[in-house]
Length: 136
Image (cartoon, rainbow, N blue to C red; front, top):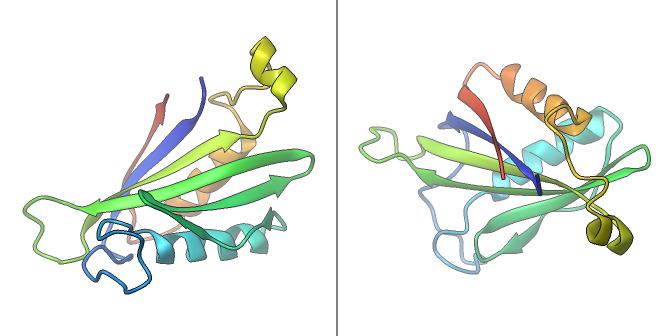
């Protein structure tokens, strides 16, 4: 598997106000990336500042010798009464060397600690619901 995704729902993060600095109007996830960075930092996981892409936001994380790319994005749920009620996705991809890629080694697995850490952080939040995982 190339990466795993953690999906969840919440109305905590912005999906209704397009900020002036967004690359495009659907570039939501900045506040989720900031929250995730702070939560991981509190667990002594090294993280970069969030960056923006045309699909959402990302940050890099390092736990021990393992490095990860974390992408976040969300969209408003159809028919939602609250303007920020959204479905969110956190993509977790393990950083691999070119040799790892060529040989198909060091891929992320369902039991990767970073997936468990992020999922655990989400489960601690009372306003987060319907947490699931997908493998891609």
